[in-house]
Amino acid sequence: GYQPTWWKEAVVYQIYPRSFNDSNGDGIGDLKGITSKLDYLQNLGVSVVWLSPHFDSPNADNGYDIRDYRKVMAEFGTMADFDTLLASIKQRHMRLIIDLVVNHTSDEHHWFVESRSSKDNPYRDYYIWRPGKPNPASPTGFDPPNNYPSFFSGSAWQFDPTTKEYYLHYFAVKQPDLNWDNPKVRTEVFDLMKFWLDKGVDGFRMDVIPLISKRAGLRDLTPDELQHAHLVYANGPHMNEYLQQMNREVLSKYDVMTVGEALGISLQQTPMLVDDRRHELDMIFNFDAVRVNRDGRQWNDWALPQLKAIYAAHARELDTHSWDTVFLANHDNPRLVSSFGDDSAAFRVPSAKLLATMLLTLRGTVFLYQGDELGMTNYPFRTMADFDDIEAKNGYKADVLTGHTSEEAYLANLRHMSRDNARTPMQWDATSQAGFTTGPRSWLAVNPNYTQINAASEIKDRDSIYSYTARLIALRSKTHALVYGDYKDLDPENPKIYAYTRTLGADRYLVVLNFGKDPIAYTIPGDIKPKHLLMTNQGSTEINISTLNLKPWEARIYIY
Ligand code: TEU
Ligand code: CA
Image (cartoon, rainbow, N blue to C red):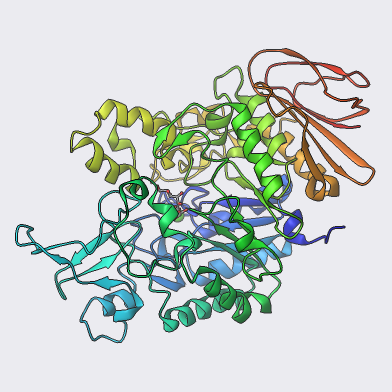
């Protein structure tokens, strides 16, 4: 049996507000801009919007560095604009979840301003301060307390001259980590969560939530651990205890959904966060699939059986008590069609549709990223000046300026991997700046392919990626078998075809995906006879046969 639940059936659409729609011509997307596009989202058929951070921030990391959790970022508008957005979403019977970024704050948050001012300040213990190791040869007189690396290059420790101690920052220097072992910090976080829940938001996406509990003693990492520090940073000794307290004191009092961004958590560990008998989170994002094409920071070729093996592991490790998520893109990853499909002129449209078919027929709550419903692509970056992202810029200093990597190699990798690929403005129409802004420029350059790839032309075209995605969402939304049904991979080793079934009682669905540019005559394993063709991205009509003549990047959904 299964328990129908709104958030299990949800199709979530992620909005990166800076890049979605600019209402006042300053080149920066804003809340009013989002509100004016809600019909677009409703017509697409998504049921939940996830808004990346909209809080007051100096934008060292585009809002993932929060200065005031109860204030709207001035560039995005006012609290009244937020209230209007929320009310307008609810009016359309959709829901809104917001980003909860509480592993760290901005260094401009007043807690940190106080904390760094003296060792006996009441906020000192809100953050993680340690004395350095004395070293007369170092300019400050000290070395960092341990060898922890930051995700954004260099040490995870920053020396602060006022008190001559170091503070911990897993991400940017301007993102000091909160000390969750301090009960006052937990109370502050729970209070700010209630502030937004009482306004009516429907839940949270929780940024790097497995990192909140730090290892006792903060010992040095071994050379091996240094290769994957996130595995040590995640899943600390009190993580589950703090999440249970959060659930007890806050989440359990509201009808909301939670999804943790689970950096460093393996599929095997996933039930430790999401098993519904534990009362922690509803679901998490596991990175195995979205990062099958990289090794650390390096872009890597990937093969279809690897991806299938990951989805098989999802099915194996998550039982009926642990709900899953399905996603292959977000604001931290390159564009869906460029990474997992083929963004060449010949195959961009069918491969984007194939990927949408896969995402919307796998098991778990589906998360779509803005622009992927149009088949937006990676950006043709030429020089370092084209990038905005702190990760790309810090990496350049750490890798290229030190001579470890050549500029060409670094740029070539960034073209595949850079987070800015996904952050270029939404392509609304073929007018200047893609209709994103009425101003002369946008904060990050618009992809020059906007004259071909844009919402205005796709909305009116029944064969567009947008229209096809809308039909898929409608199908999934009314089909419990595609949400709750069992998943079975029919042909795990096949290097080109991904064929699987989703079944719930008597309802039986077959999905066949040709992952590549070769046409293939494919014989369906077992004695599955496709009876009724529900969706195809290539206009085929074949039914009642066991060998399918698949065109390049063809996707089909059958009832059998
Ligand atoms: O991301 C954390 C994360 O795990 C990454 O995808 C991260 O971007 C990458 O590992 C860096 O190498 C979250 C947010 O989604 C991201 O935008 C923020 O930059 C980060 O946390 C810090 O808040
Ligand atoms: Ca604006």
